[in-house]
Image 1 (cartoon, rainbow, N blue to C red):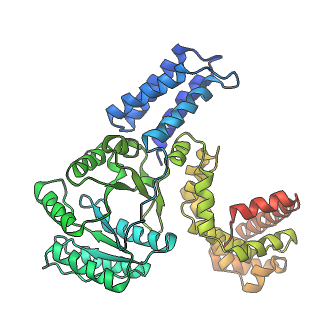
Image 2: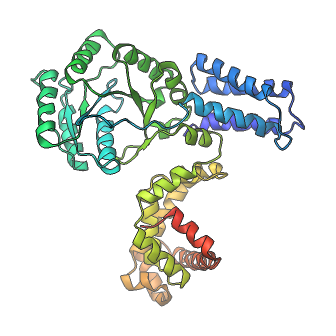
Image 3: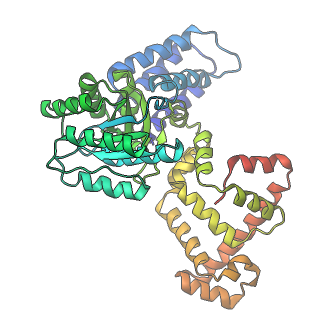
Length: 447
């Protein structure tokens, strides 16, 4: 995520690191490089100009702490400004209204509206204990209504009836009645899109907004389109007065122009980020955490939250007990591997750990994925008894496992050796005392 921008900024700070002390000249030279980095990241030129002006005023206008080196001094203010330009702090979607809270998603065709609607519904159901109802008013795209019905079934959320021959206003009016009668405290409305903004689209959406009176009108925009996303956001905001945005494909965006520009240009906050194709790849947008990741400082809070969503507390305690008693088995190892894979891209997870951003790309390399696949195949080829007690793995058993997993006996031997080393290391960690045990519980890494 934002790798191009991160690499450019890292280069700027590295060059500044060679300077012995902070001067107006070296700060201004560094800021020229920061400006170019932001422009190359497709950040709006007005946003870039204001960004550089604000950082320069702060960097040169405050007394320099003796404990800070030149690059630390500049990083401090660049981080603060990155956070500020993206909105300052996370914005919770306001649900404190008389139910059902009505949320209408708008956007261009292909931006990911329908999938984002399902992701938002899943988020409200699982994270906010809501009982949403979905409805599609997209009578122009033949597959839109069927797509929403399929997605609704996958997340266990009902979808109101709609037909392509109906008027969108009639559809949403009937959905409102169903929400009231059915006790649904949230109604999520999918709308039609176009390949570009036009008067017909805006007229239809304006008419629908008048009829539905949504509490939130949220734009879904493709982050990878950069400045185009910003222009689209401005166009929708001028006509519909957006209350927020969802940026899709943020995990694949190497530049960051949309995320760093859209809030400053429209004034509408980024509420959520789509982080992949899966329906659980949907997060509250945290400007401070993203600023930290852009600057290579990691994002431990998001990592812990991901772990918490994928762990079972009772199993985590049992795992800790096993580690202390050196009873950690290959079966436990396989469970942990599955948990980590449920949490998403291993590269993304490593990128959240401070100082390990450079390793993130290697973690998702083809070779790394092949190695994980080999390990999984080796464990899957074992009997339950072998997974629970690897000490019984004699030469004959190892040959059978190699054949069953499509690997070599050497691969199996190497993995067993690595597993034994891991067991020893984990046992040492748990013996370090209550601090290490509480750290493990805090991270809540379990299956």
